[in-house]
Length: 458
Image (cartoon, rainbow, N blue to C red; front, side):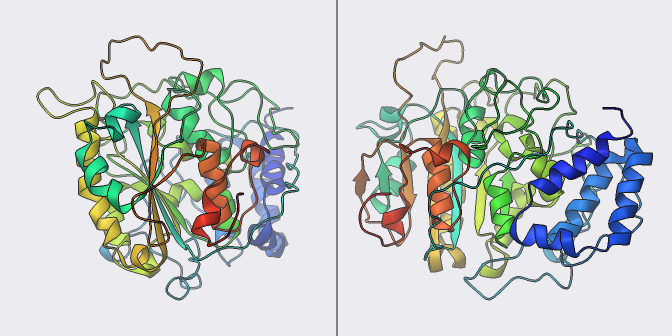
């Protein structure tokens, strides 16, 4: 396949992933405008990134794409609206309080460093046969993802995270059987938002921001085989599902800045580049959304993957609070050993301090009080000594997780075996979505039924 036709095939592959509202918008788009976009892609292959953003912008809004659009510069940020928030188009406002929130349309092209998706044979994963539940009473889900010092260190008799264990635990339900797929963080995060299994690249925390091989595509179950970091455009995520369902999602990343040090959206290395951040700062490996071309190429990441500094303002009103919020601290505040400045609290103490700063703001927010669920979970099992060699164990690392909501029994414990696939499946159940990839496994458990007021298991 030559360079002239690659953008065309990528556009077809992207279109093949679209469902529901996004597909309807694509069909409804002006034929003239769409033809201009495709023609521009075939004659200007170097402009693939802005072109993909233009297509994503048209799909995320109720307007057809413009026939021409100036390309954004590498450091261009979305224009700010009130209180520093990205401006929303007039025809795409939020719904009434407590109801689904429409995703705002990206207001600028993604950064030029975004890698182009590899061409792949267009294929749409088979829709799971499992009956899709109806959306329930929980309309706002918040997930905070940290590094675990170990189950006993977090929740045991002498906890290293006192705010988690003594302040939050009595208010919550403890998922004592929650375990990880492995001790490395990134594979667990990718499984929790995309249902994809670990592979050699993700198990190495994607120290190189590597594409999958050419022509890689999901199988009929939606699983991508092989080794790589940036999943092909046909690979769907929870974020894609939420957008298709006209729900609003956002990922809030602590310390995410561009090369100039200014806050910036959807920051990631160039394709094929090394990802070796300085100790303690933002790292792409904490941000699973930048590893999916479905979000990079169609513009969702450019508008919904934002610095943590935007969370406080978004929490101020129900209408500005996303239906799904993923919150990730920097490496120091996540509790990763050896990542904090000399003399500063690190490891479990740093992660506990992050919780004590942000959890009260979430619990005090109107959206949480009305119909919210806060999930405090862990994405990696972090040895307390950064020089220690991890010892392989025959069982997955047990880390535990907490659920806080007015719909849980305070102080209760659920010992059901859960894992990151369960986290994805449960979130999908809460919003009435189908189950992606490995989350559709027959043995994957969901903790959603009790939260939805249902009897029995999943």
